[in-house]
Image (tube, rainbow, N blue to C red; front, side, top):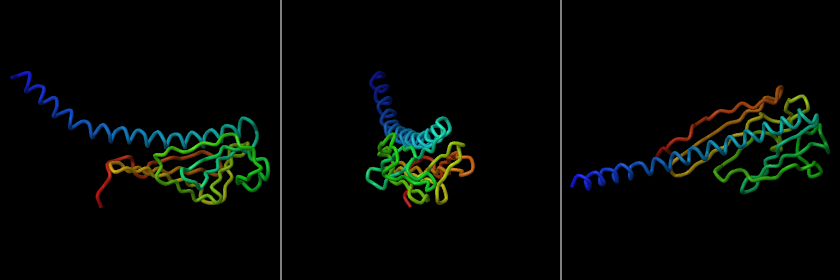
Amino acid sequence: MEILSTMVIIGIVSSMAVPRFKIAMERISYQSSDREMLSLLRLARSLAISEKAQYGIYFEDTTPRKYRLFKDVSNPSAFTYEDSDSTIKIDTLSGDFAMLYTDITGNSVVFQPNGSAGFIGGGNITSMAMSEDVIAIFVHNILASTGRVKSRAVRRPMAACTW
Protein backbone atom coordinates (compact mmCIF):
# COMPACT_ATOMS: atom_id res chain seq x y z
CA MET A 1 0.00 0.00 0.00
CA GLU A 2 2.81 2.40 0.88
CA ILE A 3 4.59 1.78 -2.43
CA LEU A 4 1.34 2.30 -4.33
CA SER A 5 0.61 5.60 -2.60
CA THR A 6 4.21 6.73 -3.20
CA MET A 7 3.85 5.93 -6.91
CA VAL A 8 0.57 7.91 -7.06
CA ILE A 9 2.21 10.94 -5.41
CA ILE A 10 5.19 10.76 -7.82
CA GLY A 11 2.76 10.54 -10.76
CA ILE A 12 0.80 13.59 -9.61
CA VAL A 13 3.95 15.67 -9.07
CA SER A 14 5.32 14.59 -12.47
CA SER A 15 2.09 15.52 -14.26
CA MET A 16 2.29 18.99 -12.75
CA ALA A 17 5.93 19.43 -13.87
CA VAL A 18 5.45 18.51 -17.55
CA PRO A 19 3.61 21.73 -18.60
CA ARG A 20 6.21 23.84 -16.76
CA PHE A 21 8.98 21.97 -18.55
CA LYS A 22 7.36 22.74 -21.92
CA ILE A 23 7.18 26.46 -21.11
CA ALA A 24 10.80 26.45 -19.91
CA MET A 25 11.95 24.81 -23.14
CA GLU A 26 10.08 27.44 -25.23
CA ARG A 27 11.71 30.23 -23.23
CA ILE A 28 15.15 28.75 -23.79
CA SER A 29 14.44 28.36 -27.51
CA TYR A 30 13.32 32.00 -27.86
CA GLN A 31 16.32 33.32 -25.99
CA SER A 32 18.61 31.17 -28.11
CA SER A 33 17.07 32.52 -31.32
CA ASP A 34 17.55 36.06 -30.08
CA ARG A 35 21.20 35.41 -29.20
CA GLU A 36 21.67 33.98 -32.70
CA MET A 37 20.57 37.30 -34.22
CA LEU A 38 22.84 39.24 -31.87
CA SER A 39 25.78 37.00 -32.83
CA LEU A 40 25.04 37.60 -36.49
CA LEU A 41 25.25 41.38 -36.06
CA ARG A 42 28.47 41.07 -34.08
CA LEU A 43 29.96 38.77 -36.72
CA ALA A 44 29.34 41.35 -39.46
CA ARG A 45 31.00 44.06 -37.34
CA SER A 46 33.99 41.82 -36.56
CA LEU A 47 34.47 40.96 -40.23
CA ALA A 48 34.40 44.64 -41.16
CA ILE A 49 37.06 45.49 -38.61
CA SER A 50 39.33 42.52 -39.25
CA GLU A 51 39.20 42.65 -43.06
CA LYS A 52 39.09 46.47 -43.35
CA ALA A 53 36.02 46.35 -45.61
CA GLN A 54 32.33 47.10 -45.27
CA TYR A 55 30.19 44.13 -44.25
CA GLY A 56 26.50 44.13 -43.58
CA ILE A 57 23.37 42.22 -42.76
CA TYR A 58 20.26 42.39 -44.93
CA PHE A 59 16.97 41.13 -43.47
CA GLU A 60 14.73 39.98 -46.32
CA ASP A 61 10.97 40.54 -46.26
CA THR A 62 10.13 36.91 -46.91
CA THR A 63 8.39 34.17 -44.99
CA PRO A 64 10.27 32.63 -43.31
CA ARG A 65 12.54 35.60 -42.65
CA LYS A 66 15.96 35.24 -44.26
CA TYR A 67 19.10 37.22 -43.79
CA ARG A 68 22.16 37.81 -45.91
CA LEU A 69 25.62 38.46 -44.62
CA PHE A 70 27.27 40.44 -47.39
CA LYS A 71 30.36 42.39 -48.30
CA ASP A 72 29.32 45.86 -49.47
CA VAL A 73 31.26 46.34 -52.70
CA SER A 74 28.90 47.83 -55.27
CA ASN A 75 27.83 51.13 -53.67
CA PRO A 76 29.43 51.48 -50.23
CA SER A 77 28.11 54.98 -49.55
CA ALA A 78 24.47 53.84 -49.82
CA PHE A 79 24.66 51.49 -46.80
CA THR A 80 22.20 49.07 -48.40
CA TYR A 81 22.27 45.61 -49.89
CA GLU A 82 22.29 45.46 -53.68
CA ASP A 83 22.23 42.38 -55.90
CA SER A 84 25.77 43.08 -57.08
CA ASP A 85 27.16 42.95 -53.50
CA SER A 86 29.17 39.88 -52.55
CA THR A 87 26.96 37.52 -50.52
CA ILE A 88 28.86 35.61 -47.85
CA LYS A 89 26.02 33.68 -46.26
CA ILE A 90 22.26 33.31 -46.70
CA ASP A 91 20.32 31.68 -43.91
CA THR A 92 16.86 31.57 -42.42
CA LEU A 93 16.15 33.15 -39.07
CA SER A 94 14.72 30.84 -36.49
CA GLY A 95 11.11 29.86 -36.99
CA ASP A 96 10.53 30.99 -33.42
CA PHE A 97 10.25 34.59 -34.59
CA ALA A 98 6.61 35.42 -35.18
CA MET A 99 7.62 38.94 -36.22
CA LEU A 100 10.77 40.81 -37.08
CA TYR A 101 10.60 44.57 -37.53
CA THR A 102 13.33 47.04 -38.35
CA ASP A 103 13.10 50.82 -38.52
CA ILE A 104 16.12 50.76 -40.81
CA THR A 105 15.44 51.88 -44.38
CA GLY A 106 16.14 49.00 -46.73
CA ASN A 107 16.48 46.53 -43.83
CA SER A 108 20.29 46.73 -44.16
CA VAL A 109 22.93 47.43 -41.53
CA VAL A 110 26.43 47.98 -42.88
CA PHE A 111 29.48 48.01 -40.61
CA GLN A 112 32.47 50.10 -41.66
CA PRO A 113 36.15 49.17 -41.23
CA ASN A 114 36.43 51.34 -38.12
CA GLY A 115 33.56 49.40 -36.50
CA SER A 116 30.93 52.11 -36.83
CA ALA A 117 27.59 51.30 -38.42
CA GLY A 118 26.01 52.86 -41.44
CA PHE A 119 22.28 52.75 -41.94
CA ILE A 120 19.34 55.02 -42.63
CA GLY A 121 16.77 55.05 -39.86
CA GLY A 122 16.72 54.48 -36.13
CA GLY A 123 18.93 51.41 -35.93
CA ASN A 124 16.40 49.26 -34.08
CA ILE A 125 15.59 45.62 -34.75
CA THR A 126 12.62 44.25 -32.83
CA SER A 127 11.72 40.59 -32.75
CA MET A 128 8.77 38.82 -31.20
CA ALA A 129 8.40 35.15 -30.49
CA MET A 130 5.05 33.82 -29.42
CA SER A 131 3.27 30.59 -28.69
CA GLU A 132 0.09 29.85 -26.79
CA ASP A 133 2.11 29.67 -23.57
CA VAL A 134 4.96 32.16 -23.97
CA ILE A 135 5.45 35.68 -25.36
CA ALA A 136 8.90 37.23 -25.77
CA ILE A 137 9.87 40.60 -27.28
CA PHE A 138 13.52 41.53 -27.83
CA VAL A 139 15.01 44.82 -29.10
CA HIS A 140 18.49 45.32 -30.55
CA ASN A 141 19.69 48.88 -30.98
CA ILE A 142 22.72 49.51 -33.15
CA LEU A 143 24.73 52.58 -32.19
CA ALA A 144 25.84 54.27 -35.40
CA SER A 145 28.96 55.92 -33.94
CA THR A 146 30.49 52.73 -32.50
CA GLY A 147 28.59 49.95 -34.27
CA ARG A 148 27.98 48.25 -30.96
CA VAL A 149 24.70 46.48 -30.45
CA LYS A 150 22.70 47.03 -27.29
CA SER A 151 20.15 44.34 -26.62
CA ARG A 152 17.33 44.16 -24.17
CA ALA A 153 14.26 42.11 -23.58
CA VAL A 154 11.24 44.40 -23.63
CA ARG A 155 9.22 41.51 -22.38
CA ARG A 156 11.12 38.53 -21.11
CA PRO A 157 9.87 35.13 -22.16
CA MET A 158 6.97 34.56 -19.86
CA ALA A 159 3.61 32.88 -19.77
CA ALA A 160 1.14 34.47 -22.16
CA CYS A 161 -1.40 36.80 -20.64
CA THR A 162 -5.09 36.61 -21.35
CA TRP A 163 -5.97 40.26 -21.86
